[in-house]
Length: 110
Image 1 (tube, rainbow, N blue to C red):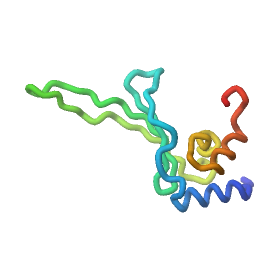
Image 2: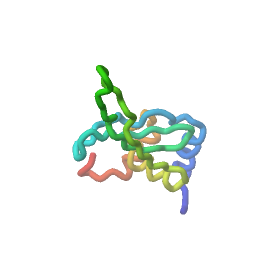
Image 3: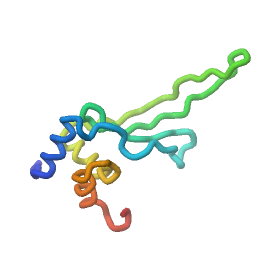
Image 4: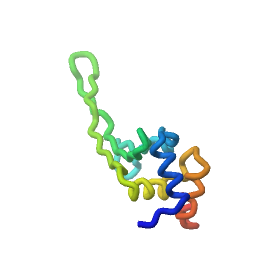
């Protein structure tokens, strides 16, 4: 895979932790009830996740919560990291990531 200087710069920003944090906003998946989805970058590794809402049951007089199930997709190689930046970089607070991502967005999706 040929990596451009722009991509090398973005991968370096990821590795340094400069892009760490929430990407976009956590949202409720409208296709499936009670499933939250979101993305974040931690220690330079992008992660997308789905998490079910915690079910409740009556335990005596109080409601108790049981943690919901969570599945994560890790973007842990350079190719996957660039894929993440192409797809979701436009949601980030970094100008370089936004410009890079916008190159790959179709007019229909803009």
